[in-house]
Amino acid sequence: MDLLTQRFLDALQAFRRSFESELLQKLSAQITGPQMFLLYFIDRQGPCKLTQLAEKMEVKPSAITVMIDRLEKSGFVTRTHGTADRRSVFVEATSLGKQVLDEAIRERNEIVGEYLTRLEPDEIRTVTALLEKMMKIDPPKN
Image 1: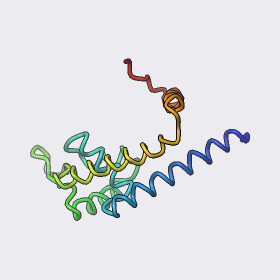
Image 2: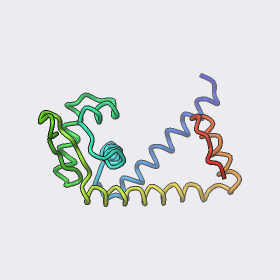
Image 3: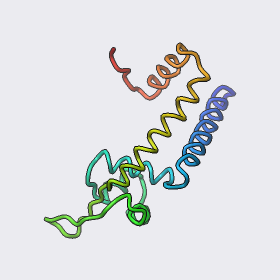
């Protein structure tokens, strides 16, 4: 691995650690990073099957069950059984879960905004365009 690649990886990892640490600190330990990702997915998808969540998180269904147990205990999600097949279990975000998620998104945006204040507007556009290019994301058309 060349020096530039290592510098990139080190900077990326430092950013991720710092960002996650700040975000979780601001959320006052209400929710963990993986729980927040899972809650975000559930909220955006609507009622989800546990198997679908396990696939999305790339974990075994038993691991999802443990995570959902914790989210349910905190009042962030509810579980229901399918009407056609009672063995199917669906998970849905509660109003409290949506509230916590909205707060997390606000905090995330604030933290990213603080990082971006270290850059000039042209640098922000350049970094964003480069990340979009690396991830093969088409920039929005203005």
